[in-house]
Length: 320
Image 1 (spheres, rainbow, N blue to C red):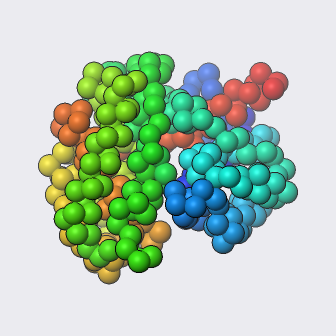
Image 2 (cartoon, rainbow, N blue to C red):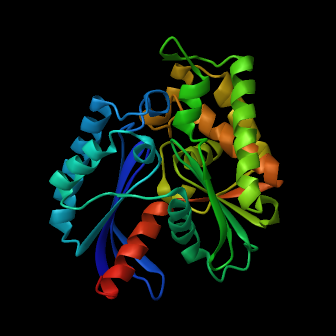
Image 3 (cartoon, helix red, strand yellow):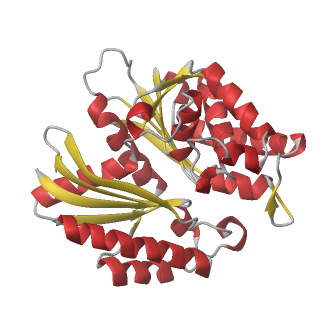
């Protein structure tokens, strides 16, 4: 077993996993797994730049993570940055800050690389399960983008498109600098059209409708699962590998899009950082299920973060 640290820095959140990993067997034992909402992608869709306050929130989380990584004695650290930092004109400021704090250069990966890591993290532990038909369609609904990957034991095709929950909220649900509560029918219609256009693009590369099992990743999907189960608090064990029917996803999405900020914030399992963006994230999930004809989504807590950890352990074993 190799002790590794993996950091996934996305548009909405930055997450840390420190784990003991055996890439040969697919075994991964968590030592510490945590998430901080930093909204690194705040305003990027509009300005093309990372906001100073978003950078500082992210660097503060990195300082906390550096202390944990040191305490647990990880042999190798891999830091992956996704959608927001790909799009920003001042991403060099972000890279320098991370290097100063953690001592490694963040890998600003492509959408295709992001998709492959997500698929690896989500499906490695599903191998051999008789109740889940293949091929899988792994869908990672992030803050700035959504990754689609179809595969069996390995990736067959993948594509990243810009329909994350933060991007959709900022693009369609904000008026005069504030999120509309609840959104208007016209706003929802425009957002839905944007999502459908992006699904058309994804389907040019990825055979979405060939999938037999839909696996959903990241905070929008896991929060929908928590709501579906009426959990009194966010519970990773209850959420991981739970199944949510299409009808339940539709009910929850419609409810979220009718609700106010206060009503969403009152949901026991809702993270405060997701209150404003969960409606958009749920609509992305619902639209995907309708496009592929999925009767349910299998929810995974293991995603790109686990894929990063597996890759770091493989590299350590190869002496890279």
